[in-house]
Image (cartoon, rainbow, N blue to C red; front, side, top):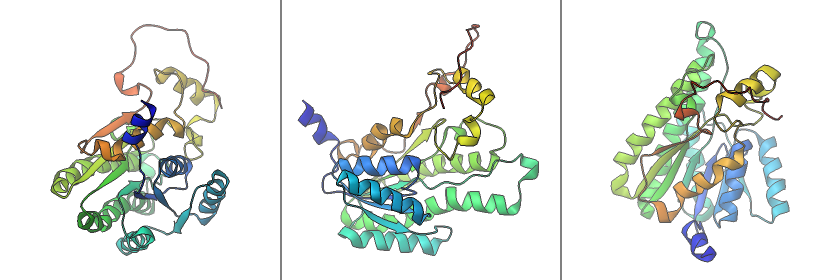
Length: 271
């Protein structure tokens, strides 16, 4: 049975481009794909983060290919797709994990804030997918996985632009899935809830917020990047290519609602 299950989620012979793949979530996803048999091309804006991931891959005995690039322009996304496709001659899987945020009240958001967040979170996702599309079409299909956010569905203070870009990614997922179905390209999204990373440290690294999260999240803890791995594998595995246009929320139960019943206060999130 274990061999059968392993074969269902095997990425043997596949080539995956993971944009934003050297961050906390991206590095875990990249490693999982490599261990599932894929040739993984890790992109990131930061060469320093790429170097750290390369060192980890080397220790794990995994082959590493890294590409540093700023994806703020359409030309840069075309260049990344071209470079990545030269590694093995194809791209079977694209994961869009690149992200940026500046937490400010709506009244304080500047043009620069708006342009930065939308450029990274939506524009680069849109045009990198567009750049990879003809490669996948020519080879007979592929899988695209976007990382959206719980904030596409639920409003929180100081992240209005970020939330709007993630809602756009969720909508884009459906559009791409519909338009590219005839080309055997599946497109899905993961919408993580609160994940404990350096990127989200300002949200959880104090006593008040730690207690708030413990009581707001039904499972009483923040996610860790490893909580997202099996869903990512599921959505890009060849055995599940009939699944497309879906947005899977992984939030510890936040979207199920809240409770009318008074409960003992839980201790804060472990940090």
